[in-house]
Length: 167
Image (tube, rainbow, N blue to C red; front, side, top):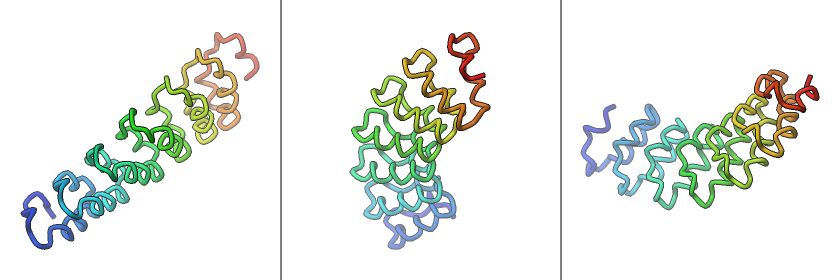
């Protein structure tokens, strides 16, 4: 179905849009954001493919709810969430718990970055690659990462004074 060829005022547009986004979540970009059923249609799209969050305007009142749904299904969806949102901490935590690699989308200057990094490496040790090595808590985070996945050792700089503690 090519939703872009269906008039927005068609009496069945909402139902056709739901069907379209179930088949191809990218069809969400052809749904007017002021359509009465937009929130529900966007939810269906995000449930089928979290990347559809990219097409949801971030200023919508339901964006936070849709973002939460998306990051719980795929931590990678965090990349579509503005980093200045008041709920970014909660969303980042959900994202790294779902997939440690989501840590790559978390700003390194966040006050809670260390906590998020610990959660991430406990989920996926190789998420250590996203942790700056000059952090005061790097050793602790790296230790957790290597315990979770020995291959995470490749992200520990060999010239660190504490490198021997890992070998």
